[in-house]
Length: 243
Image (tube, rainbow, N blue to C red; front, top):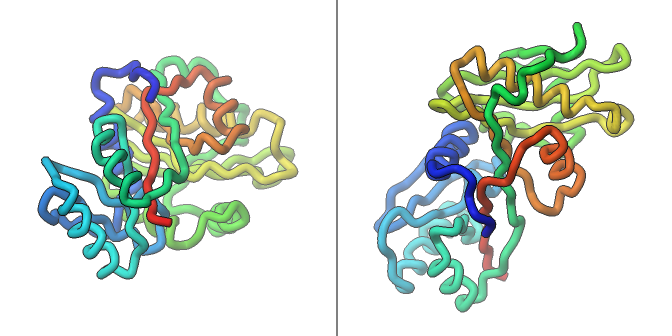
């Protein structure tokens, strides 16, 4: 993994979980087992919370199978021994992810054009429709509803039509942006950049000082976007799934 540029990357990971929470978390031996109820890998993956042995992997596998889930582990750079053990057990790497971060002050130098970006909660029907167009299911919208702290959807309007949507939430000093979707015919016009700025202005009002986003490495366009607005990779993770 790349060298982290924040000393408190652990706080960022905590905020990632708090702003995109599982439906349930079970402390089982050295593991945290998550039930995501269809909300995606991030809310369904197991992670270690203490010293484990190779035999303990079977315990985590059984717990996930009891939830009728394919065994899935989330791996950070602190989990390299687990990464090797899972590789030897036949687990494949899937969906490597970059976490981007920047100080909010760098994002709130210019407000979006008038009547182009709106912070709205609960989300409007048109926002849920746009999420669905991008493959973000009702189960993932339910993840947003589970967030306990400050949260909002960001509705983007461009060329006098709904253009995009995102979700932002705050935990401590960290804001995370999730589920950014821009309609295909509205892309390449700066809509996503303005949406991120709107999220930053909203997060500043909630007292946050840092803006973060997680992005799969395979999403070339999104990675380019986050770099273009001054965000930097501060850490990475990936998943291991058997077969």
